[in-house]
Image 1 (tube, rainbow, N blue to C red):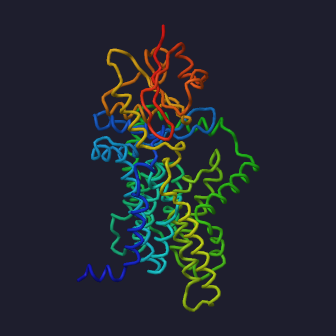
Image 2 (cartoon, rainbow, N blue to C red):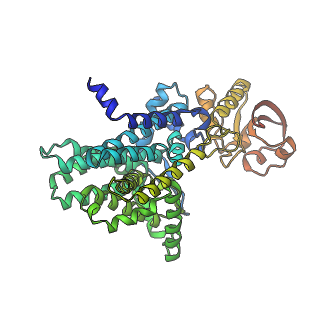
Image 3 (cartoon, rainbow, N blue to C red):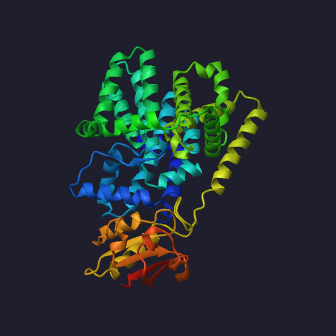
Length: 481
């Protein structure tokens, strides 16, 4: 009876969650991403399953000439179990990313329903769950694409801390731990920690602040240990970049503000209306609203001053806050006491929003998210299997691809390792006897390649070993001397 009452009371949310799940799981293997970053990361995660543990995370950047920064190792340990469960199939981490997105939608609903209203909760889960950009990101395994889930956990944990009269240690510990994981997924998630500490301080929650730090240290334990064992390698690299890197000029900051505003607008269409909150005294009286607004403003500011051109995933730490704020504003406009024309205008805007997103789903697209035209995980698996079947174990070989910038073919290297074949390293193309090339170019175009991976291998003969899909083929280049 309780379950039936829950379903009856919250059926709009469950319908939204079902549609959100269908949109994300639909043709997942064809629409997910499996590019150079995934190939590199999955090789490391596969190594973890084989006992090769690491305390160093993915590279971040490069955004200047002074070297890469590195994140913490949390991402590798989050995706490794899913590679294991899916028998090293790259679809495993993509499945995990979808599940975290659905969990994020659920947490958004829970936060809004408990601390705002049921109407806001339904609207917020719909706006997040049906957003085309967020659907694309939630299909692709990538460290920043997991941040919204941990951001939602940290927001919920903070709110429970602020209202918990029993002073349980669970919620502040969980807030700190989730922020620590988010921080390892991208350093811009530091905004979450700053806001949580500020509001705990304002509420004189000193014990909670200590517990937040303990949770944070527990999450960052591996990264901290790596720093101690390697003479603060990442910290020193960060300080060098801060000292020697470019100082942001006013012109650059203004450019980043413009780019960031356009990115947020393209993602949520009406995010500029957040400014109206500043003029709504009733909304500002709610601590949750001021918390979310502070989080959004700080997160936006950090993106603006972050070196390099703003990217959509830079805003991952504030997705949840932005969605909850937008939903609160629109819900206030939809209040039964509001003027009919205002409610009608809001309904029109929301309808346009959902129609624009529906038109951007591209559910029958032939390429994975951010992947070359006509190329996806299915094609990579087929091409890698064709190479593995052709490899002569008595001859050294390497693999290359010219479909995009990943000429060293990291996704294929991962799949070949799964199939039990090991190409030479990325610096040993001239030493190979055979190079397998994935390309859509003709034989004549390949002979005129200037890319080092192929040009350094000359002279060679070319033969085709497989037609994969959409004009993309696997070629075999055999050394002639």
